[in-house]
Image 1: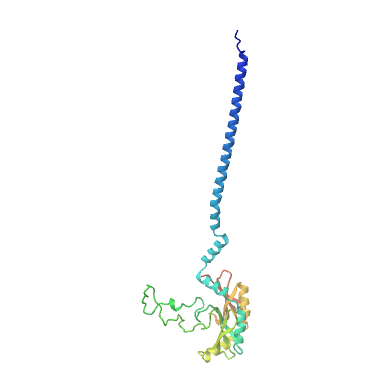
Image 2 (image 1 turned 180 degrees about the horizontal axis):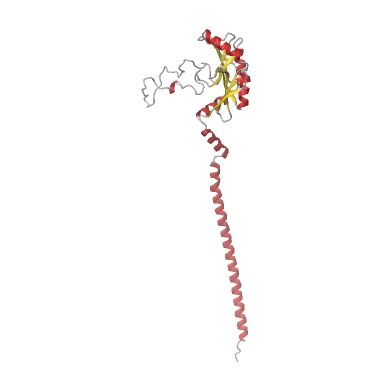
Length: 286
C-alpha cells in the first residue's frame, strides 16, 4: 500500500526553499551594493587627488599680489619720476649738510644756488642725464654698418655752454654756487654720498656789475637757505633737491625751492627771502 505525503508538508518545504533563495538574493544584492559603493568612493577620491595635483603648480607660478602691484606702480611712473626716485635713492647727503660744506669751502661764502644732480649732468641740465657719446648722432648723419646712426668720435654730449660735470663724478653731486663777501661766485661740487668736496672753482666770467648784484642779494636775504627750505617743506612735504636765490617777475627777491614728494613729483615753492613767507607754488606732475 502506497502512502502519499501530506499536501501541507509539500507546501511547507516549498516555502522554506523560497525563503532560503530570497535570503541568498538579499545577501548577494547587499554585497554588490557594498562593492559599488567602494568603487564609487575610490573613483571620487582619485578624481579629487588628480584635480589637486593640477591646481598646485598653477598656484606656485602665479605672481604674488604685492609684486604685481609694485610692478604696476613702477610702470605707471613717468620718466622724470623714475629719474628723481633713482637720484634720491642713491643720495646720502641732505641739502643742509651740502650747504654747510659748500660755504666752508669759500672764505666768508654764502650759498646762493644749490642743485642735486646725477653723474654726467652738465650745469645747464638739471632734469635729465646728458646723452652719452654713443647716443649722439654723427654730424654727417651717416649710418653705421649695423644700420644705426653712428656717434661722432668728438661728440661729448656737453651742454651748449660747454659746462660739464666734474670729471671725477661717479655718483650724485650737490653743485653749489657760493658768493664771497665781494660777490664773487664760486662753484663747489660735493659728493652726495660721501659729503666730500670734489672740486671748487671761481667764476672768472663775472664783471663788476654781476658781483655787485650778487653781493646786494646776499645782503638783502634775511632768510638762510635752511630757513627757506623749512618754509617750503612746511608748505609741501618732501625732500629738498634744489634752491636758488633770485628775483621773481615782480622783482621780489625769493628763494625758489624744489621739493620732491613721496609720489616723486616735484614742486617749486617760492619763499620771500626777506620775510620767509611763501609767495608761489607750482607742481610738475610729468
